[in-house]
Length: 381
Image 1 (cartoon, rainbow, N blue to C red):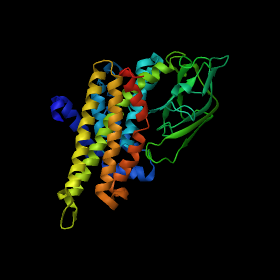
Image 2: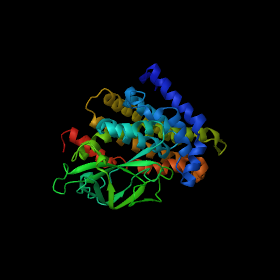
Image 3: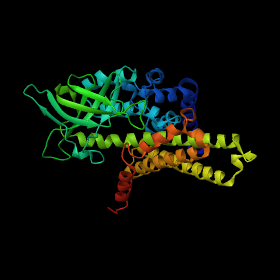
């Protein structure tokens, strides 16, 4: 896809790809998945490269990159599995909320520490009764006479929240009578007294982990408020554009690996006296998948380019997220079929790609939600 990138962009993508091959490795990512271990070692390596600061301005100590640069990084980070990419992407796109909406004191406290890899961030939106309908958030936050926030409720599917030194950007309800305007965001360290976090034994996210969180009159200072009271919906909807661009890029990176792995196996495996590749039905299956990956990549690049140019692009971002996630799922399914019984072994990696692909069509906004957004742009809803 070099024709769609200039020399510096292609060099950046190649750099992150080489880093993944030489410094992280597929074997390391597989081990973290099998042991359900957070990839602390790899995260520290990425922090040392300065890549956590890619989107922050130079004045903030970052690299001053844009969403397109970030999406290219996401594509390479996702090549050996989306779960690993999530361990880096979730903290970075959550931390950007502080750059956009935080007070100077919050920026001073968190941004450099984050770029240096000393702290992480996680975003907490969903609840048992608030998934796609995030505005149905019920976790309640009220201020006491001293101005501290007292928070009670339950959050769900908060990825990376159990990792050490993590601050959770949590969507809470501060006004029971205003559905959208009654939401706010609080920055809550995951070691805050009264906060209970359980890592869930889910099908995917073995390494980064996704969690349920219980809060029983948890006290956080007034300074924990991100933005203004009632600005939570604006913060979250702004956040989703960056999240969906980056995850769509990671989906494409992993989908390409799934196809490339299947193609390589089809050339190596001999059945009935000839390579699997010589069977037309398999060649056509893989040709379809590669075409879909290329199409998904183009959709991702278009959305990221528009976002980097500050153009309205909610439709294009939803298209990229929708098609990227569904393409990853189809590529992983085809990979399972081509590799046959071998695909079921962790060492083949394909079963992990398949597990993570299922989550990709749900997390960050389901495929059905993306279609609704696209349909609204077509004036059909």
